[in-house]
Image (cartoon, rainbow over all chains, first blue to last red; front, side, top):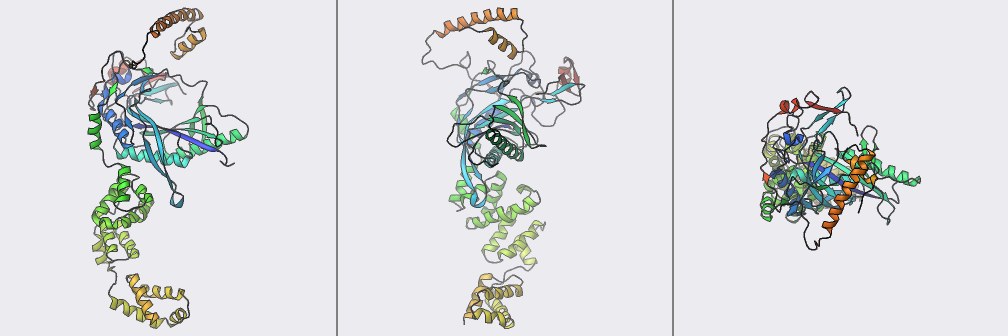
Length: 485
Length: 95
């Protein structure tokens, strides 16, 4: 059954763990991987008489995020208690923000698909709010009991909520990737999905075009882009099948099982939590001065959107190239370094090399661009030699190969050492052309009889004789001149 | 506005407080008393007054992002009912 005649509506909530040293309301460390409970302070354990004190660093992360997505950083926001009982939440409530969040509005630009089918859109954000993480429950092997580790309790989170603006798993993944790149770009989250630093919940519903929104189900805790895509695709199909079979969708929270590839109900609306939010009397309103916002703005790196615009306007790159090259700070920095060294005139060539040859090799060997064996300076040197006709594009691939394989040399040194310099001396090329014409009388006759293909065969012969080093344009011109004569 | 016994049971359940039928009735009376007090307050004209999130008109103080707590697990766990391998043990709860 297909998704024809159904519209899919997806909204995403993301919990990003903020890259602070200490917790949001206590001075305990947030370092990952410590022995159980050694980083759980009296505040994190909710011992009687303790009070939360807000971490300036966590607030600063929220300000940076708000600035980076063109949102409003609220002058005044309020912490609220979200009440529920679970053993990994010692207070019996989570400190979060409800009516007045710290970040309101904004949007994230996404690029979906590739090649001709690629398109862009902006996913609007509803809000982002500060809150504390819960601890961890371990359910195995404690004589029928659960073990509780509260090291994570009180770790600062920024929960980022979108409008229901996405309409496919591809868009959802594109959004999650763009957001992931952005929070790392501005340095507020390490983005480590395996360690749970970046977790997505997806709200999915389907409807007939033009009808009101369908009943949604929320898929919880997706910690990889692949699971996000698989879970949404399964959920969409399940909802469509259910509705087409005459069934109804019950509002529910579901979990994705990566082993079966299915989603299953965790709780329905009937037993949904009633969180009874109310302003936390232990915390005063968070007031963020405009001066603090301005000061923070000055510390931000050039943002992806600004860099993207600059790549298009100053370097003449296409929107597609500019978006791809600003997909992560590492890629953008590398590209910037190549262009700085090779010159803005070579920007398009630099873009092609970074997104083509380099990225293909990095993918193949599962390497990060920051660990690329070919440095930005080396690649710039290579590009400069293509630009000034010292080598052809084909020969350049050979030089790239040598650089990749750890020749700690410049492109110039490799060209020199391996004798790859392009032959541009007209006399030398002419000699080769004459030899080829003399030895291939049949091709010459065919060409003169009107067979264009015979010309290409002759070009190939000359290039072969030149070991690929003759300047292709000059070979063409000389052959044409001689054959035309 | 007044509450029903059913609503009182729901509130008690959310707070994980066990209540007998007799307690539900007493609690209902108490809560309804509080509601009538609230009704009196709601009669006050608050048009044009911004809602406050806190009784004091002050802003939250912030602390620097620095680790100031050291490991006190042994002391904290000395008063816990049951621990093992550094973990607090609780009755099994799986959602």
